[in-house]
Length: 102
Image (cartoon, rainbow, N blue to C red; front, side, top):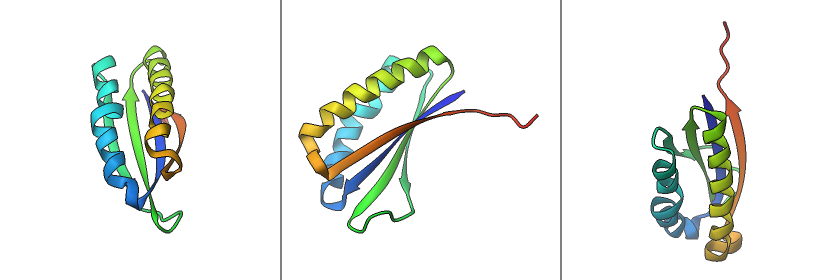
């Protein structure tokens, strides 16, 4: 199991626009392209910058091929967000792999 995590730092005045974009563009792309994926959105409770809120969008996928698709689509989608919100939204992505203790 892999988790593709994108953390978004969104200026508070742009949150409604960002959420609308996430709901219509980002999140449905992955559920459409990778039928067995799980897409979840979390608000990060740690305050990093006053006047902005962090969100974590996590996409769970089962195989390295699915992960490669998520990586490509995420990059393309985030590039399309830049003209919409500009500097009001910054993001970075990380990949996690499930690890068993035993």
